[in-house]
Amino acid sequence: MTQAGSMYAHALYDLAKDEGLSEQILSELNMLREIFSENRDFVRLMSTPNLSKEERASVLDETFRGKLQQYLLNFLKLLMEKGYFSSVFDCVSAYRDLYNEDHGIVPVRAYTSLPMSDTQKQKLQEKLSSITGMTVDLKNIVDPRTLGGVKLDWDGRQLDDTVQHRLSDMHRMLRNTPVAS
Image 1 (cartoon, rainbow, N blue to C red):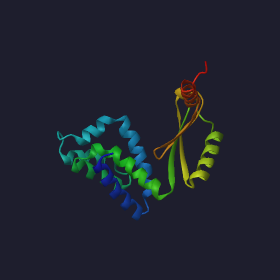
Image 2 (image 1 turned 30 degrees about the vertical axis):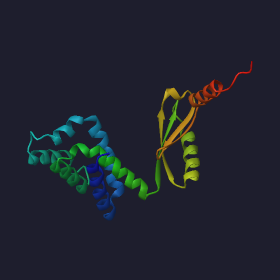
Image 3 (image 1 turned 135 degrees about the vertical axis):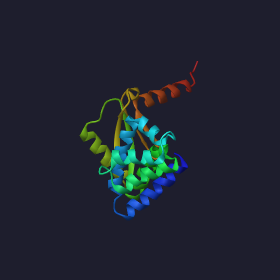
């Protein structure tokens, strides 16, 4: 994450929090992340010196006025004006981290070989919430390499209870076991 992305996200979050708009702006930032991910050329356009800052600000206005909270639209214009529009993805990540920290939310990624059912997700969320004492935002990622079981990833920690991990442990144990002659 860039220092600029983090710094600008902190400023936006502080403003949004003071104005009681932190959840709305988070929702709109998530929407923008998806839009910009699918339209990388728009991010490049907002970063190019080929268009004047006024022209780029006009494009932002025409595209987002009435669709985004005004503070967020002004934030995008500020990023563009200061030459940091390409840091918008870092801003979204940093803002989300600040929001999660303030609201006691821990994002958890659960890697499984098949999609989890809603019931499985709910039970896992409840179990993790009771363990962490926080609200768990669970995202299920299908990864056929897990072969079965689940691997959890949160706050830089991992809990791996997949078949692949168990087989690797067994392989290591067998390789390190002396054979009697």
